[in-house]
Structures are given as C-alpha cells and as structure tokens.
Image (cartoon, rainbow, N blue to C red; front, side, top):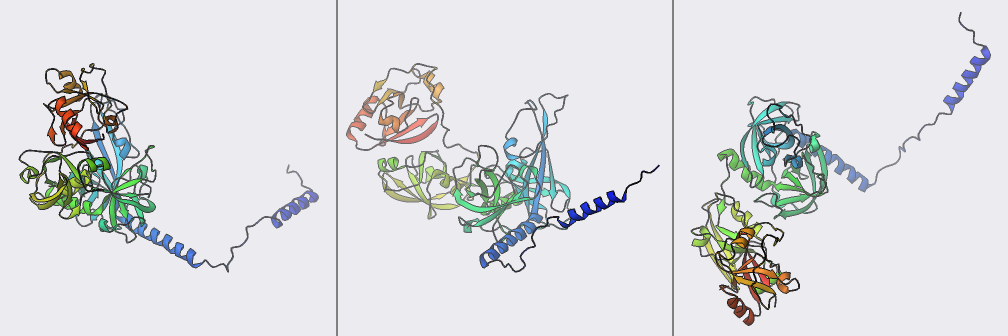
Length: 499
C-alpha cells in the first residue's frame, strides 16, 4: 500500500524549494565596459607570444628514454644518473647479483628533420644500451648514437627508422649565442622529472660562465628559467624562437631548480654537432702547457705585471710540444690568443681546445714583466690532462714531520731527499726530485696566509732554483717581492709570499 502524502506537506516543500531557488547566490557579471590599459595589453601580447613560441618549438623537442645495465654494484646503490634524470626504474636480475637495469629520462631537439638528427647532452646517452625517442606527435622510435663528445657534453643521435612519421614535427634553428645579452627573455623546453614537453620562462642571468667543473671545455649561459633533472639536452630559446643554448646542468643543493641553470652555447653546439655528424669525433687544438691557478692581485704584483693584468699562468711546458717549440716557458702569463683577451686558464683551454689542429695562432704573453708575442702552430689534443689537482685536506698523521729549519717566513724547510723523505713523497704524491720540502707552517705567518702548507715542495723563488734552505734565506733576505713556484701533489702552482 502506497502511503498518502497530505496536500499541506506538498505545499510546504514547494514553498521551501521556491524560496531556496529565489535566493541562490550568483557572482557579479564581468564589467563589459572595462578596457585594459596599454601596459596590460602589452603584457597580454608578451604572454601570447611566449605561448606561441613554446607551442611551435615543442614540435622539435624529443623525450629521450635510455636503459643500461650496470654491473658490479648492488641494485639499490645510487649513481650519477640520479642527478641527471627524473624517474628511473631498477629491475635487478636475481640470476646475476650485482647487476641492475636502469632507465633514465632526458631531452633533445631536432636539428635536421629530413635526416632525423637530434642533439642532446653526452651525459644523457652515455653508456646507454637502448635509446628510445618520443616525438611531439606521439610516435616513438629507436635511435642510434652518431657521435658524442664528453669534453663539451654534446652528443648527436639519429632516428633509426628512415621512414619515421614527420607529420606535426619541426626542426629547430640554431641562433648565435654570441649575440645573447644578460636580461633577455628565454624559454627552456624539456622533460623535467619525466614530465613530457614542459616549458619554463625566465631571463639570461649571465654569459661566458667558465671554470664550473661541468665540462672540460666550453663556457656556459646561465639562466633563471627553471631547469630540473630531465631537462638535460632540451633547447633554450630566445624570443625569435631560435635555440641559443642546450640545457645541461643546474646548481642546487636540493637537486631541483634553484634558479641557477646552465646551457651549452648554441655556437659550440653547432660546431661540435657538425664534427660529430661528419667525422664521428671532435678534433681539437693542443698547446702543451700545464696551467697554474688564476692570477690574483698578490701574484700580479709579485710578477711585476701591470696592475689589473689577467691571463693564463703557465705552470709547466711539456717537451716537444707546440708551446715548447714556440719558446713558451713556465711562469709566462698568456693574455691574448689571436687578439682575443684571455682572463683565466679556463679561457685559454676553451680558446685553444675549440680550434682545429694545425691552426696558427698569435699568442701574446708577459714574461718577467715584459710583453712578448709569438706564433704557435697547434698540435692535436689526444689525451685529457688535468691541469691541477683538487684541494685536499692536510694529513700529517701518517708520519711525524722531519725537523727541518724554520725561516723568517714562518716556513720550516728541508732539502728534498728521495731516501730521507720517502714517506712524505708517498703521502703527498710528490713528483719532484729536488727542491725544499715544507714540513711545517707557522699558523700565524704570512706564508700560511699565502696558502703554503705542509707537503708542498718549493722549486723556485724569484726564478732562482731552490736547492737548500740557504738558497731560500738568501733570496728572501734581499727581495722586496717574493714569487714562489711550488709543487702540490703533482701539480705546479705559484704563490706570492708577502714580507
């Protein structure tokens, strides 16, 4: 039996519904008469322009997925891939303990759509057993490495399938990184943390960032456009839609963007990519010099150089090399190559290392305060050389220091002896066969302030060979300025010792 509902109840419900409907809140209507100011309209145009450039350029971006088998370590152990890539999947093979299959995600961009050439970072594809490319049209293809260069962190891969679907794709054009200016707007494209075809917007923070320890050769463009793991190899665009850099690294304590990202300049990308495509490798020039630390005001003064001089300080010259044949000597300060100013050892390495072997270059340098020049025919760079060792903590615990003789400079010195100081030689990695071994440094002395420390071997003072403590005291006593050449763990350095 269906229960009967009274008419009074129905009327009450109707009234409640009607009341609720009448009093429902609605947002005010937009002001149809409001017109944006000229400044706001300009912002709208900029926003639309950024969106247009991003959408068009994304047609040339590739998501690069790699996999590799890593042997000899537990599957759960972290490795350098953790910095460069976003999501990764470890699939240990139970039958082969110590092996793991690891996947990583990076980015790249199309240089030549017809040929299927894609440029990326070397660290994205280094050691990869398989490389898969996901293009912006949704298609996925296998790729092969045409060439890679660890010294500049640049690699070129090619889509294996010559008949790959090119619909909806585009190749990106390389602009001139020499024209990049601090403050100009840029767009960074890539796959941060594996999030496909993402874009970030920012400005150029700095140019010509060298000596960063990211690569052996090349300066970098610094940007505050967000770059994260997975962006590596993606393009950095200017407001003309041209690639002015390739996103490569970040400075971050957390591993995520801190507003300091670095990109390989497009001119370097172009030069290296062409060599990799045409020859499969990169040829570079070679001088044959070992470089010391960068100049500071104390060194400049001690070497009788004009105030403010900057350049590459030569620590040693290898025998029978282009530099040796041209008369370059230890202690020379190279300030120009082909008329271009050199401000540091890193700039000299970049300038020469990116030239072709056989190139003839005019080199200007200072020697004993006098300006000189010479022409050098560059050799071929064959083996990577590390100009100077990293800083290491002092450790005197293994052997008690020899007695030595304290000098007025605050240094305790002994003539280096292979027999007597065998433990020191091994402990500090000393390669010199003569000189004065620093066994102790007065912590309150100016020698300590100059950076000299136990284990250093003093080779020359003001270009005078040091064979005994007497030699040291003699030169030190009659000199107003003291310039020391020393060895530290196999690397040659210079120090200005204030009196």
